[in-house]
Length: 328
Length: 278
Image (tube, rainbow over all chains, first blue to last red):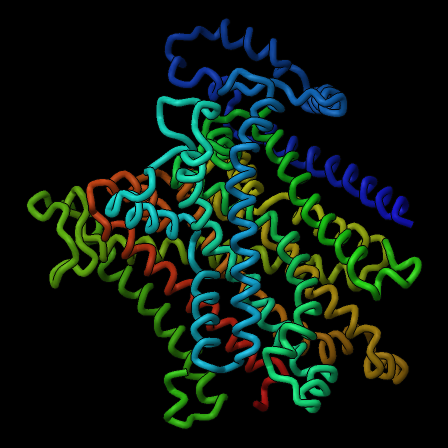
């Protein structure tokens, strides 16, 4: 049964990637941004039309779009994503390196916001309509309306510029390479961007957990437990917790897309050299192979999150475990 | 919460919240129209002033009044967000209705398109589309409009599907009413509120995503006082201690976005039969 589940998922992923790849290719090939111009950049005045033609020919830009797409798709299927024009390096190796840097940022922010948001949601739900609940709700609603980059800028201003506690930019001290930096230095640079992402990321999980907790506390089993003299704290931890935790975990996995988007903005503010900043550079400087590579990579990233959410549901929820054929 | 002590009922409070938000928005547009051009006046004698009586949001490095610039920027941001969200909601309405009424194949196609539209992180999709449009305000609007429809499409599709199989519509069909009559008298009253609330709740997302996109440097020229661009500019002056350049426009944006959220939720409470009588 689990193999069937996996096969269906893999088939869906392949179909999805094919669709996203086709659409993205159509989009970028219709862009008014000329790839040769973008590649040449400021050297535009020093380059002759002949030289431009040579570049265009070498890239196959003189061919019709359908043929270009066929060749591109063929190379993609074999795992060749092409060469990034701004880094002069294979796209996959650029994405790999940058993603590792981003990964630690996203992982830290993801676990922080998950744990804090769940705790806050549980607290607010257990104390519905008290002052504490209202405070938490106000915070969550405000954060849901706040741009990630603005939070980053405020934190940067307070902790890096005014107080000087955290570094102003980058993922490691300037002048050192990633390998030379110590773990402590890396963490020090990671802290503020991660906190930025968590402060925003908490909102959704808090509101969701709060709703679920209130629902659980009004359920028959909670009322029954109360009738037997159990305290609210007892009910929350012994009975509601397990019912609330599952949707929270799946929601957190399903929010990887938002996390990725937040990382793009946060990395821009803190000049953190991760995949998010690379996405912006690729878009602004017209690095089409890299941009397409990142689009496909982020699609797989989001898909993995949704897949994990599904998988956890099927493995953990006893109701789904028992019913045969419920997996689709 | 504050008005609670005045013992107004829920309906009055909801109406007051809606009215307050509408007043706020008209205030922004009106003030931007009357006062916004002030933000282009450079006055080098009044450079880098912190907020005070004469310039509530301070002035920038060219002596331009940040209050006027924020108002103008807010207006541009809201306009972009509103246009994009409206386009998106119309796409969602058409797709949702088509999926629910035009048979199995259309339904499968639309559902799958929704999956594809939600497969990539929003911001990456926004960057891709804005790149494909070659930037500009038009690029931002198209990007935001083209990436926000899937969620609302699903809501409308589910709503219409559920309605079509409900007993009273089946009964109405048995009684010989034409599909057009059923659509007008039974479907529209349910779908229109869903659509309106969906549209209102799309605004915050659209405005925030548009501001994020312009902050990253995709979109309008750096001279347009759009909020995202104002904030991106203020980044360069953060280390010189000009905090007001970032704080004031950001707060103004948050307040407007929250107002849209409040507006959407209150209109929903008013239109939803379940909460209408509370």
